[in-house]
View 1 (cartoon, rainbow over the protein chains, first blue to last red):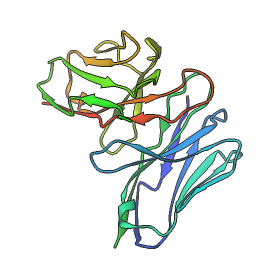
View 2 (cartoon, one colour; view 1 turned 60 degrees about the vertical axis):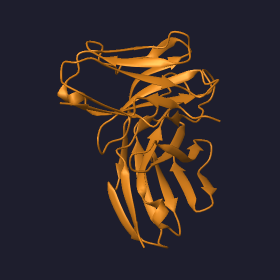
View 3 (tube, chains in turn blue, red; view 1 turned 90 degrees about the vertical axis):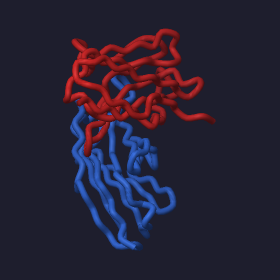
View 4 (tube, helix red, strand yellow; view 1 turned 90 degrees about the horizontal axis):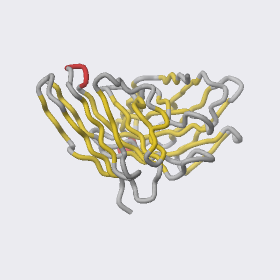
Length: 113
Length: 116
C-alpha cells in the first residue's frame, strides 16, 4: 500500500517569511495529492491539491509542486501570517481501486508575529 | 450547504463499554469514509462506503469494530468493547463521486473518544 512521509514535524517562522513542507510517497500509481489544514480542535480542510498531470499549482499565497520521478511533493506558503498557524497534512491516493487518502504525519506550523 | 455532521463531539467511557458514533454526510455524497486520528498523527482509514456497500474495510479491526450505512446516507461506527488504546478522534468524511476521478473529501468535526 501507499506510504507517505512528511517533514518537518514542526516549523516555526517569522510573520512574512516563507514556509515549505515536504512529502514523499511510495506508490508510483498515486496521482492525486491534496493538502489539508487542521486548526486545533477543528476538522481538516482542503487548502490545495494537485494531480499528477501537472507539476505546479498556485492559489494566492499557497503553491504546491510535484516531482513524479522523485515521488515527492511540497507545499509552499509565502508571506506567512499568524492565521496560517495550524497543522498541515499532505496526502496521496490513486484514482482506481482504493481511493481513501493516505496521510502524512503532519507538520505543526507556528507563525510568530 | 451544510457540512458533514458528526455526533457526539466528545465521549468518555470506561474500558470494556460499548460506544457508537454517528455521521451524516453532505447531501448527495455517495462515498463515506471513517478515519481514525491519533494525537499528533494524520488520519488513517478505517472503512470506506460507496452508497451502502463497504468497499474497503481492510483496516477495520473487525473483532471489536463494526460499521453500517443501511440506506446509503447516514453511517454508524461502533466499538464493542472499547479498549484504552481506542482513545482517539474518529473522523467521518464524504465525497461526491463513487467512480471516476478523485473528488475532494470533506471532513466532519470528529468525535473525540476517551477510554478510561
